[in-house]
Image (cartoon, rainbow, N blue to C red; front, top):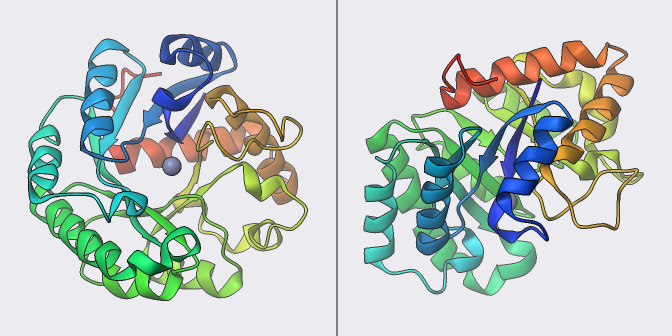
Length: 253
Ligand SMILES: [Zn+2]
């Protein structure tokens, strides 16, 4: 069994129910839905309540840093207590799409790190062209961290390893220009997670189509081949890691 540790179930071209059913048919037992603002987080909580194989995160994405209010942060804090909520995210910094909102992003990110510390919940991190600032602000985090959609090379892998951070591998690791594909062997197996980031970043061989949670199987296969280990081993390890990080109940499979 695999876990898709990062998907936006409310943004797909099929219903969340269909996507989860398709994923389960492909051997994906659990899908972690990811919140991007207060309203999206609220819908995610409802989804996790309605669908047995779905859990969710709550948080405000850096793309929404220009628009959030203190009451949005309160909403996120309140929602975090709902059943099925497993982490704060996705939060972080994105200088690729939002360098001009850097200051607002950093303020929001700091608030969300404090929130995760207070709640003792893991953090799901979005980091794009902002590795140094993300790592510097994360030194204030006292909870487990996953660097989602990881695209770093040797230096970033080693820094993540030093801090014990989880690394979420997405479909883009299968692309020819991936820096991470060449350093997979350096990643601590106990910290490896697989994810789709659906509807984005479809892995080869389904690149170019809108992504769905079932496609995490392609990323699993790619990583297993690169590491020279059986697919079942990658599935077992990454699922155990997701269970530990998100505290998934043992009966979920
Ligand atoms: Zn995402």
